[in-house]
Length: 120
Image (cartoon, rainbow, N blue to C red; front, top):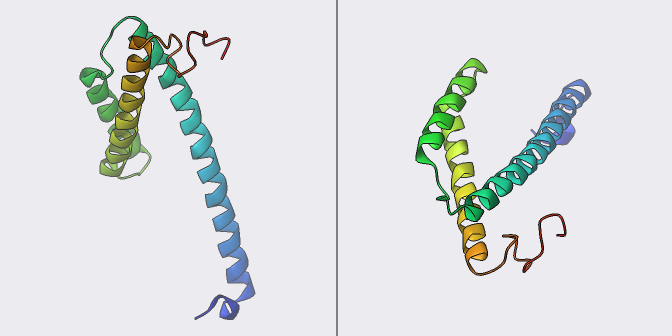
C-alpha cells in the first residue's frame, strides 16, 4: 500500500504523531546540548584540578539511577543504560581532550589559547 492509498484520516493521524515525534526529537537534542554544556564545565574543573576524566563510581550510580527512572517510565532499562553509556563515553572523551588542552597551555580547555571561558 502506498502513501497515496492511505485513508485521509489515517494519514492525518500519522502526520500528527510524526510531528509529535519530531518535536520530541528536537527537545532531546536541545536537552543533550544543555547536558554537554554542563559536562564541559565539569571537564574544565577536573582539568584545572588534575582530576581524572572518568569517575567510575558516579557512572555506576548514574546508570543505576537511570535504569530505575526508565523502568518507572515504562522504557526498557537496558536501552536507557546503553544510551547513558554512549553519552558517558562521549563525555569522558571531551574531558580527556580538555585535560590535554589545559596541559598543553590552552588554559580554557576549548582550544582558545589562554583566553578565559568568559572571554571565549
